Amino acid sequence: MSRVYNFSAGPAVLPEEVLREAAEEMMDYKGCGMSVMEMSHRSKVFDEIIKEAEADLRDLMNIPDNYKVLFLQGGASQQFAAVPMNLMKNKKAGYIITGQWAKKAFAEAKLYGEAVELASSADKTFSYIPDCSDLPITDDMDYVYICENNTIYGTKFKELPNTKGVDLVADVSSCFLSEPVDVSKYAIIYGGVQKNVGPAGVVIAIIREDLITDDVLPGTPTMLKYKTQADNDSLYNTPPCYGIYICGKVFKWLKKMGGLEVMKQKNEEKAKILYDFLDESEMFKGTVAKEDRSLMNVPFVTGDADLDAKFVKEAKAAGFENLKGHRSVGGMRASIYNAMPKEGVEKLVAFMKEFEAANK
Ligand SMILES: *Cc1c(COP(=O)(O)O)cnc(C)c1O
Image 1 (cartoon, rainbow, N blue to C red):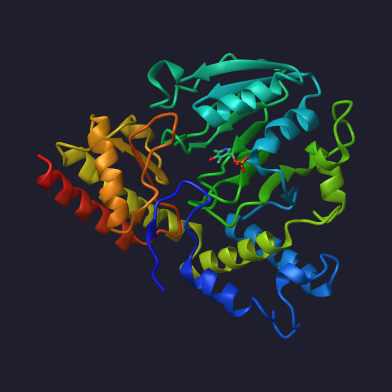
Image 2: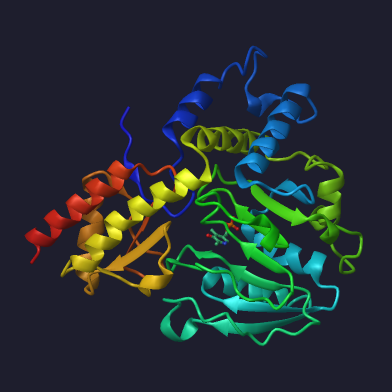
């Protein structure tokens, strides 16, 4: 067996320990004689899996009792519609546009009501986070929306926007569980798990209870109504059972590692290795404002598209996979999620140094 260093933005690297455990349990999960893939979502065994996953997540994130945890499907992209459908009572919301994912969520919200652009960093190809201390937020807005970590551009809100008392909704797909968060500052935190948590197919939404009501936009599909999912403990229909099971294992792994405070330290350490090199290199440059740099997604360029392509190709041959930047921005991007070991980043930097010396 040989494993590469996988810098994919998502689906992405998972902890080896989790994969090994899953492999061991593949044919016979804890003596039931079947895989988790093969069992009823109404079985006692699966009930324990999903309950334990939720309990461990609550523990890890310190989720207050007045928040529900939902395990959903449809990807983060489906929440672009579910959020306005469930929350737009006044049919008005504010969006902060910091990249493609925020832009898509904004466009989707416009289908359901008045979506107002509060701020944007489009003027500099989303290479920074706009000042959000005094935005044109009005009382009649149902919520303010952010994409907290911009997977494609590599920026992160280091401070939450001043929402002037309006509820905050955050897409945290690519920074989920990368550091501690104060859940009480959000109305909804949601994310597709395939970036930093688990396999594709699961979306986790953490929603303040008072927002889960029957008062949704007319025509909201039953499945997209948070109340349907909450009333049924995420088991209204068949949930993504196997994905939830793997997420549960990742939660246990994170707890064993020491929790989110420790993950934050590790993530800062890893990111520093790469950013320090980008700052001193004459060939490779980071592409975003230093103060807004993501700990998870690190885009960089050489400034020469042919050299970028050569680097990606040679890196792949050397066992560093998926370093090509997003198709919309080019260059390179190293996603260094929780499960990427420090050694992977150190070796990548060593390889970049060699490449730079050889291609001066
Ligand atoms: C990947 C990503 C999405 C889209 O996720 P899907 O699960 O493919 O719909 C949305 N938001 C962010 C921040 C992402 O990184």
